[in-house]
Length: 561
Image 1 (spheres, rainbow, N blue to C red):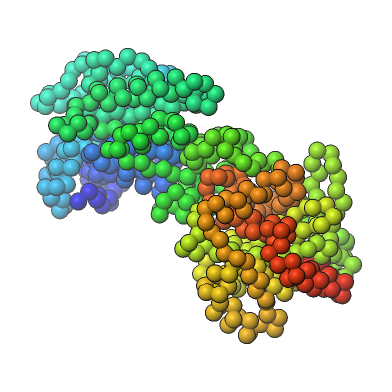
Image 2 (cartoon, rainbow, N blue to C red):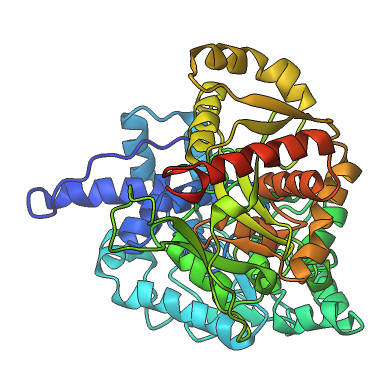
């Protein structure tokens, strides 16, 4: 029923009257069209089309958690209240019926559009609330298209229109409350007596003061904010069951286990929640490791945001992950970085004198000599994201080199994708050839059940087949947690060296215990193999094979290219 199909809009020069009708009907039928085209918010994208779809609800009680800088205020606090206040006339109804929309759609249009409606918009800081009102001023006063399409609601000199209360021209033939403006703006804690809105929009009410109170204070600011939120609900009418009749939208980020959004989740069950992670993985429409707003919050921008902010702030501003600073187990500064380089770049890569070297990035003034990868103990582990895995979406192939003299662990190669098993196996053999490996580690459940057929079939075709070294399978929550958190002392001591291209691992390292753990979980297994030894005999045999390959090499292999 609630599905508007956009009408083609002709050029205003070709047919001015048809242009007017098509823009008006599209504006009434689609919040996204209204915001993007009529209000000229042309930086909105596919992500905002989904956002608008969630807001096109006549019985809206929603907590919308979106990344910072994703224009959630533009859509939710500026375009939406104006959309609610648009007039839906008999002429509009007649044209919609003429193109096939029936009674249910017309009833919905009359429910969401009302020029006599009243919306209260709030923010933690009063001035920011008033600034949102200035955006509405610009739409009514300076937007020629909006003024042309909806002239009947433009305020005259008789209507009150100031910073905190704005009345546009209302329908005189319909009941209206003259005490509350079309748009009213308040800061958190300000008096709301005498205000009787049809809708409330709380935009970033849980701000800096509330965060400080939650993290470092006694929580009284948070308690006051929650109490004020409850008072906002009392401004609305209720039905016999105690459910608010008006629309309620809460916009903001998730800040912790005791923030406003958490209180709403626990105590106001009539609210729905929609949460988006700038890095993806938040819902079916946004797969993991795919930015939800790539047009302006792509990987390069997010990388800079991670560098500019603390891990706590980044994960709340952009990922909407509820963690506390003390829960961030790993720190980005613990990871050491390396690069690959040629020992003799003036020689051809096929020349045995031009071997591959690991170049250590200088940190804290400590210079570490270049290292040949072939001198390391190199292991490869494959970890599947099968149905029993928790907080996993990618298969993972990880090649790690271990230097027993220094205790350094080098992440030499990483492949992590949600691919079919056939593609996974192809990459296993490709990466094994790159590092001149004869075997790899794999959980027993995968080796004996999931990948058994694929591996046996591939080994029959390979000139140099791979041996599978089996790891005992234990994916219980405690086992996985212990595996990952065993990395903490190794990371804290600066023993983990990572290539800067391995961004998936770095993001998971920074966000743990929140978010995905594909590569982290795999590294935990590798650490177990090297440090504890699932099979010391097997590991020693593997090390012996690598040593012989390194000594007898001509070119290439683990010490070459």
